[in-house]
Image 1 (tube, rainbow, N blue to C red):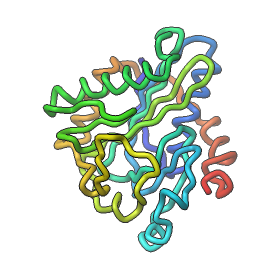
Image 2 (image 1 turned 45 degrees about the vertical axis):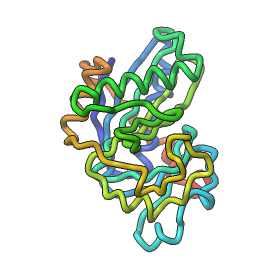
Image 3 (image 1 turned 30 degrees about the vertical axis):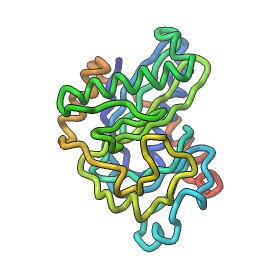
Length: 237
């Protein structure tokens, strides 16, 4: 698997690059699997493709804090990310891994791989709900998926040194909650991993056997997607 450890200058570019890697794999005509790692330079809110921003995001609080909100191409509920939250994205091939065409298998495969990677460093990491990772019942990672014909994109968060009070301030209670949440507030529900960014990066890369440098990341497609989607209020709102 290829490894791309790359954070681009703007939130729109970073969100676009995840989708561009999926498009690049689809156009390759053969399996093309990539693990990407990045960390935002500033806090931002990211809602799911079908989310109603007004229902999930405290927009007035975000305006007061100067935090912008964006929309990703995958599903799921809103998240807050920024410095202290490592983002990852993995593009996987159905030709190499046909079982992943069943969405339940895809969630289980990725979450079990990520949990095993972190379990070597932190005891008690386990998948929870549909696509969370938790330690001691507290969420440390939220994830979502986008499927295409020959590949899927699975991406998410890994909290390690994030100001968790921002989650409480920026997000409303989600419209759908996993059972293990038990109605807890954001502040009572989320937690940071007791790890450094470097430790997480190494563990995740080793778990995915991502040991080859990506030969050419899709610059042009990323720029196109910024213009078409991620840089447009019509898409984000």
